[in-house]
Amino acid sequence: MSTITIEGVETQEVHDLLKGMNADHAQGYLYAKPLAYDDYLQYLNSQYNLKMLDSPF
Image (tube, rainbow, N blue to C red):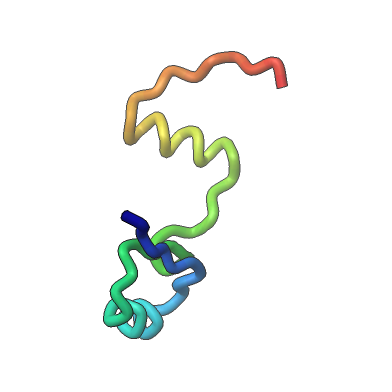
């Protein structure tokens, strides 16, 4: 079974319009602003209590 994800949702009006188009998921600035890398890692850790490993990259 495939799913439909709408990208680039920036306003409530667009959200409301797309809601009637049977999309399964949506993402965009309306739901979450872009995060810097360190902020993203902090968010992941706060949500999932992850242990970060040293990376050779």
